[in-house]
Length: 450
Image 1 (cartoon, rainbow, N blue to C red):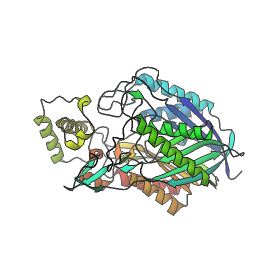
Image 2: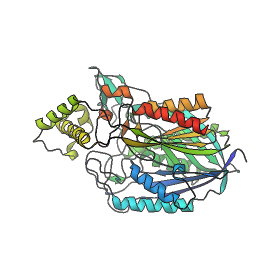
Image 3: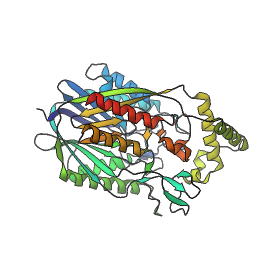
Image 4: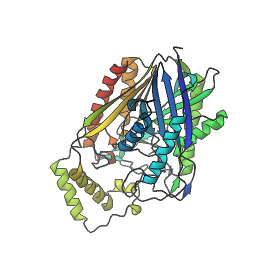
């Protein structure tokens, strides 16, 4: 049928049952227990012989090399082409590390376990159910905020202390629209939900494994509906967004905060289900364009300044476990030395160019943009505007942290203003012009699949 799609869905437990290094902060964290389980969710689609596969993982970030390896192994049996596989993560900061990031260390044993579990789940997830696609969206207040603020001195800082008197205004916008794509069987039962939300999944901290608010969102929705199906939280561009209300004195940290946010998003999603609209599925398609991006532009003045800082604090030992989030704002000497050393390491080891996979997937009148990093929210807003106004898509979902990780992707003008996201490092290596190139490339891809 013209308006239907053949689909299959599954969800697998990927929680480690042994201590692992947890990624997300400066300091080393070794897991000491489990607050709630981690999952990977699989969605397999077929239409007129074309197949598309979505894989979502409760993970902070997945290196491009790992994403490529998983895709190539899936493609071996010929059911899917590499470019038809879309992998994204929920960006939790309470899961096993798959990268050496500050004092977190890559868990190679866990990666092999994860890959084997995903490959097995993909083999077992057969598109054999007829589904219709329905969409909805709902705007909300609060829950997410632009974390970059202009201060009275004209500079921009990331995460200033709450209620700080020198705050002037946020640097940019916020995307407070929860976008929903529901897959229903012919009897009206829900088989899966895609929820596109712009926010950081970083509310808990500590040394316990957790899926953060995306996991609580899924659990709450399933409890409310008394059903069991996968709820994919597709993280929309959020490189300059988090959950901190800077006009509130509340600490906003811990499992209680994750629960508050997850349940709030679940309520918004449930409300959106009251206004579902069916969309057409005339065809499905997927394209990947690998673009070459130069390394971050670093001036001689920046290099000299970094050298001077490292020399000034040469006798200061960096102890990441002693640092707190406000130390970036305060300009703590350890932070200054660490960022300066990061810049010098980057200058020494930077690549001539970085290859970014940009993926676009079309499911009828819905389109997805896969971006391998943490784009600023404005990038997602622009892509949705282009897709809807220029190409008549009924639903557009920009997805961050897809098919690899290349750090933050700020707007070009943000680099002169300051803040944590614009610092140069091996984990944050891209040119200042990357955002513009991403938008231009996706515009071309939209033309290719229209």
